[in-house]
Image 1 (cartoon, rainbow, N blue to C red):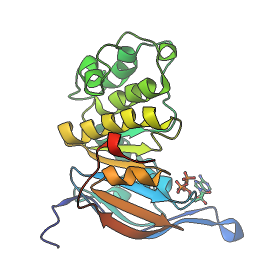
Image 2: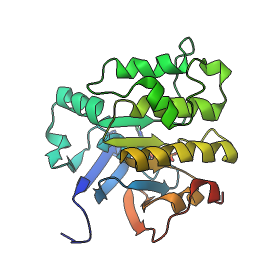
Image 3: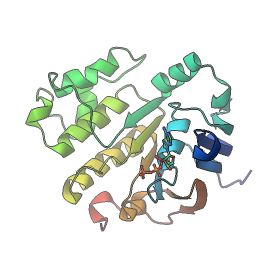
Image 4: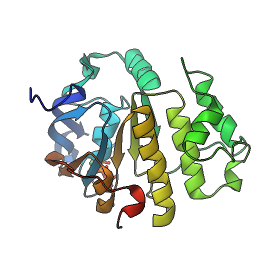
Length: 239
Ligand SMILES: Nc1ncnc2c1ncn2[C@@H]1O[C@H](COP(=O)(O)OP(=O)(O)OP(=O)(O)O)[C@@H](O)[C@H]1O
């Protein structure tokens, strides 16, 4: 192993995913080998359909690969039963998607509490909301908040159970750039203050400058991995 590389939180080898069969088969992933170091902020770039979401869904335990291995801290996810994969997902993984999926009839605090009530050692919902800069908004309903604020509630909800990994699929995709920066700041705070390994899919190549590591997907393959020597703060990104 490369000595400069800390023990990876994820290791994937030969991961493929084929949707459908015969002439209609779609080869979404064509053999992905990757090591993700613990605690990093990783950005995934690539054209639409290049396999980014499929890859994130597989390492997040939402889907199984067609072949290949995914190890999470040495545990082969492909070998887990559906029940064990669900347990892994619940304990270890926080998800954030493009659309916030908050429950409209619940306040910010109550939306986060839905998760903390079933987690093992959660944060207080107010603490999680404070971390993403919403300490003053805990009793607001989604309709009373901007898109960026709602997305930060979704981030608070994802991290309140103290997951080891935060997986974000186009978290700023529905936001203007100014609001997007505030959301990216919240994601960076989580990665830095909690040490949560964080992976972010984006179509906005400028966002890659805030990452430790940048993964480029092309047609179901990992075409390149770059390590940023210096990182750019979210409010200094150009996009
Ligand atoms: N459930 C599915 N059934 C069939 N094909 C699928 C399914 N999910 C994804 N695909 C196909 O797999 C390929 C990879 O899709 P994926 O969503 O992983 O790409 P992506 O890089 O995340 O794209 P985008 O940036 O548009 O979200 C695409 O050709 C897509 O149409």
